[in-house]
Length: 356
Image (tube, rainbow, N blue to C red; front, top):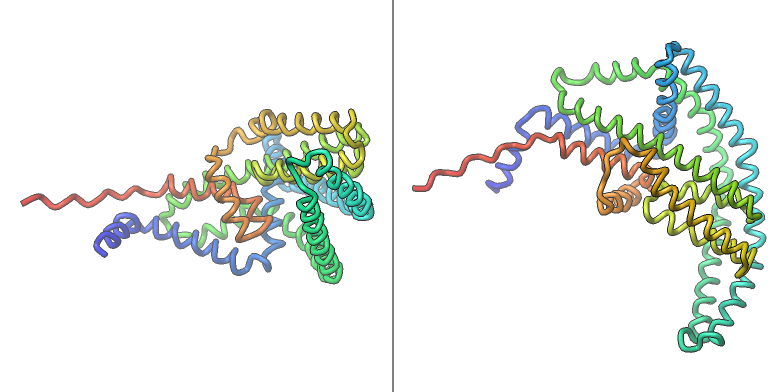
């Protein structure tokens, strides 16, 4: 008990430390309890973070902030319109076509699996192949049931989507326009001495902003390169597969490995063991290599490097708590933890009692 009291006294005797701990606990509690309700607000903050960088560039070129905000917000609305009326219908069309082609793919895949015991009897048996086919059918049945459940709740999802489309642009505009007022209002309720919290926030603010903008450009660049590459080789569902590869960068290490499976499977079903399949496979590997070794160092040069173990642990923890959003913010949240630990005052241990 004495050790616990001594540790608590050393680390929480500073009022700034107590205030920082209260703020962190309050923020995480609000997100955990009201995360679903505040979804549009949190998403709008992310988009405002993304657009703030462009606003600052225009401000550095002596453009008044209000005009810069209006210009950037107009571009955002134009991009949102393109997504709603061009991209989403195209993705929906390709996804529908893929769902229609799945039975033929399964037939070809089953035929290829049934040939394995004949070609490699010492590696796999007919019973094992039948077990694999039975497991695949079970998984597909479960997936079909989920699709039916999703379709039954599509009306509620459509209402939620419309609500997001109305609220989010309004919130994004006011987050950009009244950023200084909002920050000043928050600072009004801060204690007079909050240097520790301010130092942590300044570091985390820069890291999160750089990470969000860097991830956005990485997704966009990888998506575009994959789309044009797949289209050049005539691969089906080029836009859908390009989007999957682009979104896979949200999950370091794991995302690229997982998305490789559908890319190679669809290429194999379409081209078979041919030269076209080899071209697609090699081009995809080149894109992944350039992304990891060229694009990521350029976009994230200002982001604090974290150990791979810390990144994977953060993905598992925050992804389990908040799902996809937790996966996206795993690295910024890990950076927040790192910044707090770095800025946390190191209390001096009490001097040991002199020996008799």
